[in-house]
Length: 125
Image (cartoon, rainbow, N blue to C red):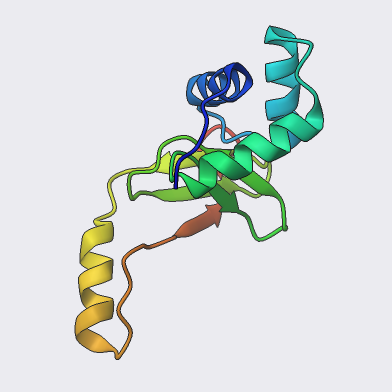
């Protein structure tokens, strides 16, 4: 699929890459709007969808139903604090091992893993 890289899409991706907080679409809109006030919500939604199709952005769905977005598409896990609602990256889990166990121990073959841990972060404890 041939996709166009527009200036708006570049700005949205750049802003998301700088945000390590796994923003919601509204938080991303606010950050993008602060950088370029001509970019509207519909443009954000459309371009985030395109970035996900291109595997440049991943969505992080939390158990409370809120979608967050992550520009780091390498396999890794997430942790959501139930108190402050922040989402954190967890890199020290061997996701490839989880995929291998899935392949070995079941009839399923998966090429991606999504793990969300929930609890209380160290700041809120």
